[in-house]
Amino acid sequence: MTSLDRRQLLKTIAAAPLLARLVSASESVAQATLPAEVAGVRLPRSALALAAAEFCRQNCPQFLFNHCMRTYTFGALLLQRQTRRFNADTAFVAAALHDLGLLQPFESARESFEIDGADAAEKFTLSHHRSAAEADQVWHAVELHDGKWALTARQGPEAKLVSLGAAADVYGPDPGEIEDRHIAEVLAAFPRQQFKRQFTSLLIAHCERKPN
Image (cartoon, rainbow, N blue to C red; front, top):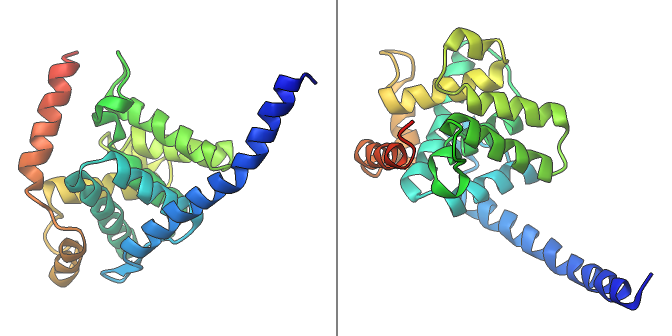
């Protein structure tokens, strides 16, 4: 090992405690600002889920962050109504990151926003030492979140949660699907902030950058 290699190794070792503290601080911020429960739905508090929430908050405008949180909560309420069980961590990561592909830093030159977002969410999941199988679940849940529901359902309840939750928030739930008091609690926790207008502007800007 050369002296340069040794110096680099020492720098890496010295930086490790600082990096660990920064990650811990980021998770603490997410834990402090994210409700533990909304409308009877418990938001997961694992290190992965808190990191996903903070990643979403740091990279998304506030109206889009709120949409992602409503997506998880509405989706969980709808799956509970169907008495379907799901992996909360996997579903939450996919819901939190499902619209990353609409944001310029995560866009590719040619792929659709669903694939760009799925690739970014998969990379995030793997970077937090989750298995390739779990990262693949996240990828499919993001990629299929606005696709055909029959195909989405074949990917498992986590993918179904994201598609149902996103649809409920963008188009509105079907009458009687979600209790009014639960809708009110979700909107109080994660306000819409003129979501329709702001989301439409986001979509238009995305399409102008990527007309194909």
